[in-house]
Image 1 (tube, helix red, strand yellow):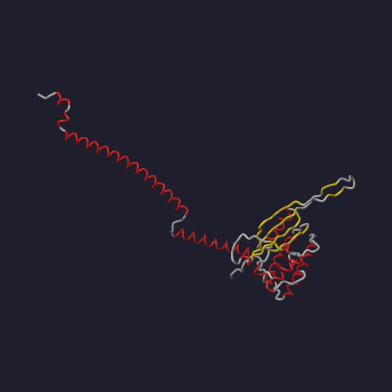
Image 2 (image 1 turned 30 degrees about the vertical axis):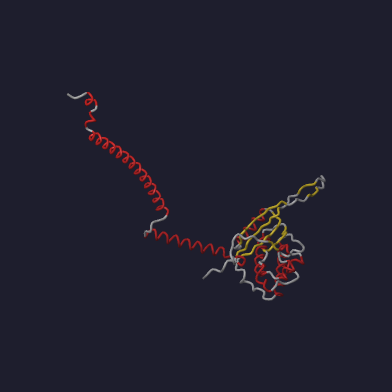
Length: 298
């Protein structure tokens, strides 16, 4: 007959079976944990795959696939872009500043060329009723008594032509008064010692200013010139001048525009003897850069 101890603890009689059951339970638990981890990893990879698919669809919508049809469309767009570029180059070509007039080859020729330029601008200002200073030299005060140096002939000649076109369009807008014309300070490599001495002794260094360029390059000074013009007028004068340069096809970049009020004059009305403030123009300081574009290839 079994004892009470044997009936209460049946597992003690079969320890191997107990161990197998425990091992099977642990295996089942491990498999369940692994299955849960695999499901979570599968979901993560699925989300990553969906995101990659969306990015791929977005890229294929932006960058056309290399099919024959897309090749024809790209070629058409390229040809349209080339035509548009040619139109812009032609529109910006403007005037060749060095061909329609012969550049002075002698210092004496350059001296008389600048004198004739100043006289022509004075006459134009008189016709357009534009006020000038009595000693206005239109930016070439250094050469009123002495001709440009030999190494300055080309530089000065091109600036004279550019300023001529700028002043013609400005006077056509009828400002009240031209107060100042300044040229870009020439690079040291082309500044002759006689020019520098004349500028110091004659006090005409005011005709030059330091032009801060927006572009960098070894030959940028040879492809553009900076000028600063100060005049009196209203916004209609400024707008007329800018539109006039565009209509004339001048390759000009407007670098800055400053407006300053001018103290209005006071006049007295005879009937009341009360001072009345007359309407006064504004002072505009405009810095422009004239670009020299190379001739179009034929």
